[in-house]
Structures are given as C-alpha cells and as structure tokens.
Amino acid sequence: MKEVALGIDIGGTNTVFGFIDKEGKCLLTGSIPTQKHHDINDYLDELFKHVEKEIENSLEELDIVGIGIGAPNACYYTGTIEDAANLRWKGRIPFVSLVKKRLDVPVYITNDANAAAMGEKVFGAARNMNNFLVITLGTGLGSGIFVNGDILHGHDGFAGEVGHMIVRKSGRECGCGRKGCLETYVSATGVKRSVYKLLARHTGDSELRDIPFNNLTAKMVAEAANRGDEVAKETFTYTATILGEVLANVVAVTSPEAIFLFGGLTKAGDILFKPVEETLEEQLLAIYKGKIKVMPSGIKDNAAVLGAAALIWNKK
Image 1 (cartoon, rainbow, N blue to C red):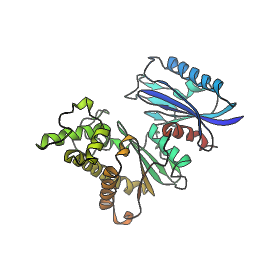
Image 2 (spheres, rainbow, N blue to C red):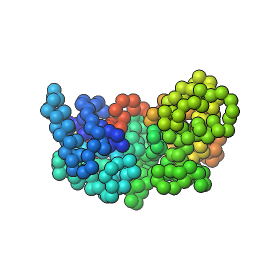
Image 3 (cartoon, helix red, strand yellow):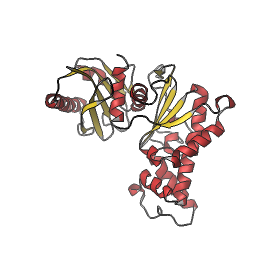
Image 4 (spheres, one colour):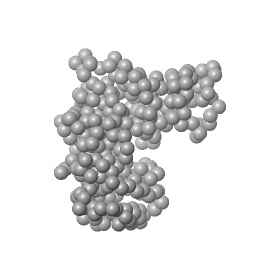
C-alpha cells in the first residue's frame, strides 16, 4: 500500500487536489469548480466524491496519511477559513472539522502562500534553509515566511501579509478595503493598472495603447517588454522597484537567507528579477548587503498541491 498525502489547493476559480508521496511525486490529480456550490457542505461532498473516484481508479492501493489544504484567509491555528474575499462562503467556516467528518485523518490548513513556502521547504529549493521568504505573484501578492525552521503564523494565525503593507499613502484601492497596499502595485492586476497610468503619461507609440483593460494580461505586458516596448519596460521597472524596496524592509525584520519569487508573474524572467535584485541590494541595511539571494521557486509542476501536501509530510 502506497502512503500518500492528499493536497488540496482552493483557488477562486478551481479547487485542485492531488495524491503526493513522501518524495514529492504527484501520483494522481483532479479538480472541481470552487464557486459552483453556495453551501460549503455541497462543495465538500462533490470534492470528496471526486477524491474517492480517483482512488478507485488508481493502479495501486493508496493509504491517505493526512490532508493538507491551502486556501485564502485560512488560519492554521483554528482550522478555519475566515471571510475570504474571492470565495462565496462568508463568515468563519470550520473547514478542518468539516473535512474530518468525511475522512478522519490528520488535517492541516493554512493560507495558500504559507503552503507554497512549506512546499519550498519540503520539496523545493529551500530544503536546507531555515530562514527564507516565498512571495507569490499572481492576481494578488501572497507571502510565506519561514523563521528558525518554521512558518511564521503569529499569535492569531494570520501573520505574514506582506501584500497588504501600505506602500503608497492614499494610493490605489485594494480589495481588502484599504488604499496603497503592495499587491495593488506588485501583482498581475497591479501591472495592468501601472500600464494605464504610464500610457496616460506618455504620448509615444506602444503596442499596449489600444488594448482594453479587461483584455490586457501581465503576460502580454512582459512579452511587449521583451520586444522593447518602452511603456511595458517602464512598467516592469516600476513594479520591480516597489517590490525591491518593500523586501528590503522585510529583510530588516526577518533576515532571510533567500527570497523565492513564485507565480505567473515570475515568467517575465530577468525584466522582473534583475531590477528586484538591484533595488533590494541598494536599499538593504549595510549588515545585510551581499547576503540575500533572490531566486525562482524550485518547484515547477503541481506546486500549489505539493505545497498543501507538504503540510502533512513536514509532520512525519
């Protein structure tokens, strides 16, 4: 019988799950729409129906030793998901206890960025590190912080919200209800907003000028930048500079060995990484200069599910 952890990644659009062995090999995967059901129990019924179907179709017998879950606004201490803006179940959802009613094994939940950090520690490039950051760059900006060999949860389980550090007083409106948060500038959405700010400032040609906001993607901006479009290049320099400045402040508090950048925005490559590295080094306190590595994630495939499953394997 093959021992596996069930990793579940709850996204705003889809919930993806996979059976992960101790070496980080993903044996089977599946997914369901996250937003299909208004009732959380209907959602979980469908999820575990698909889990059971995959187990039945497996070529080898699987022994689920635990379930790890990454989700927005998830609290590791209480096992709850609390008022997640991009999920339809509002209030305080006792997610872990509801899952255990369906499969009575150890169950751990944390926010998706913490899960990414745990995946980097257990299966990725941080296996030999005890102090590092993972910054997830997608629609928003998430962060998982490892300090002295463990995730920084804080007293209430919600520590590490680097994306909601205010970087511009009275700046851009954020989904959290405040203004000027980092993720409104440094994220796929933030990149799009910056493009239109810069297009209003410049009168020159840009291949991005005639693209409607809802049709524009950060990938399109990155590709335009790599082709030499000046507005696109300036957008990434602006984005990366803000991120580098904030990371210099985070370093002053946490003193990490490395900072891993993870997520769709990192596919931009050097046009993102290089100015982040340069700004970070420039803004660091002297005692930290030359010590902090900025690296891409060491996990390539099924990263979110691997990160969730790592919550279980880290306990073994």
